[in-house]
Each structure stands twice: as C-alpha cells, then as structure tokens.
Image (tube, rainbow, N blue to C red; front, side, top):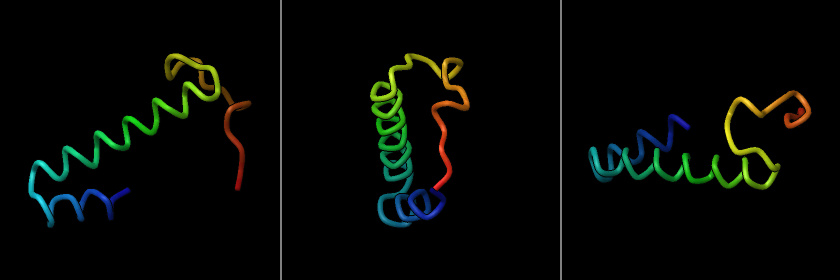
Length: 51
C-alpha cells in the first residue's frame, strides 16, 4: 500500500494520493459486498484466510 501512495504523490502530488486512497476504498467496499457484509463490524474471523 505504501508504494501506491508514494507513487501517487511522486506522480501527481496530492491529487495522486487522493486517487490511490479512493481506489483502495473502492476495492475494500467491493470485497465487503462480495462476502456479504455492509460494515466493518460485521467482518469476522470467518471472512479472513491465510495465504
């Protein structure tokens, strides 16, 4: 994640950082919807696996 933020900052300044953070937020919301939760409090150990 840090690499993405640094890339955004180096490439496009503050707007780049905002874009990278928005992308991460969008991806997190998409994943939450895919597993059937609507807020962070609903995420349990059953939703997390080890690689």
